[in-house]
Amino acid sequence: MKTDIHPDYQLVIFNDLASGEKVLTRSTTSSNKTMEWEDGNTYPVIDVEISAASHPFYTGKQRIMDTAGRVERFNARFKGFGGKK
Image (tube, rainbow, N blue to C red; front, top):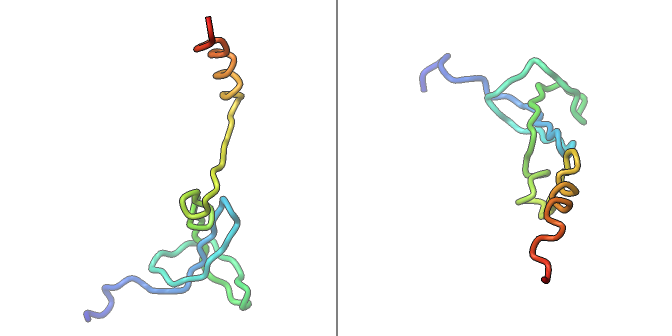
């Protein structure tokens, strides 16, 4: 193996912003943001939007987000559609 061509392989905390779960693992990625882990050591933190802890495929839970009443507007618009005549 050639020397000085491989990225640094270090311990990193991955922080799931959706669920708040944190995982300490090894990675070649790094960050300027750091956090103290349960063992008292400080590690770089990588924030991720979604992981296996919060993804509906893995959790089996769907999150329904209604922004600005889209469901209510849909129901009002199609209230009489398909009714008996």
